[in-house]
Length: 128
Image (cartoon, rainbow, N blue to C red; front, side, top):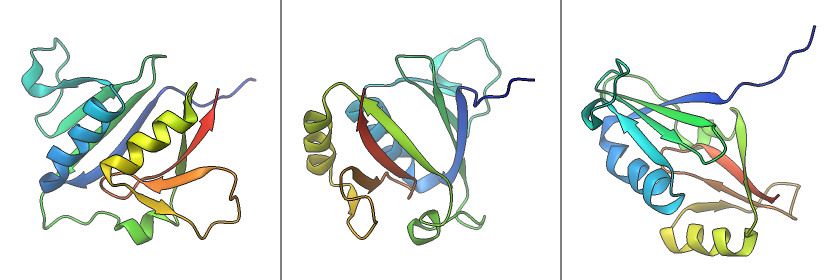
């Protein structure tokens, strides 16, 4: 039996964060977006955005109301951390800093750039 990670991931965030999340994944990371209002054939609920990375990975974001529980940025530090691979680490880090992401500087691995994306998800940037 061979098991490996798939290419689809989902995070749950507050509806009010949708504009900054879209700006981050679509505009800064240049992901293609599919959402309910983008005339796709899939039956994607109105509260979900699917951000498509160039190599086929899909990062989905499900938006919920203010009254529903989601992880805070502090709690995301104790949840799953993800990687972003790039052929231009310095360029991506510069774009992330200009965007205003919160850098994580108190982690033992000081050789990589760790940060909170909008909504709190933790990523590290590595070279390809």
